[in-house]
Length: 52
Image (cartoon, rainbow, N blue to C red):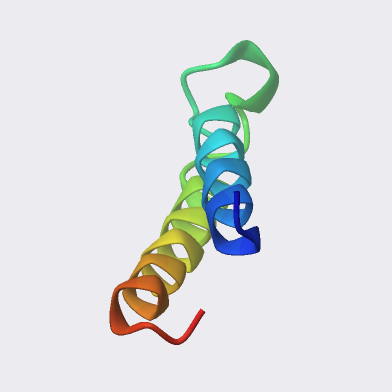
């Protein structure tokens, strides 16, 4: 496994954990999941372009 694969897996797990449907994150709103989603999109774009 490369470092980029591990990074993507960790970001996906963080994104799932920040979804406002879970009881611990219900009061957070959509901010954390939106930020993590943007980071995930950027990492995926860099991975597809071969920069990572």
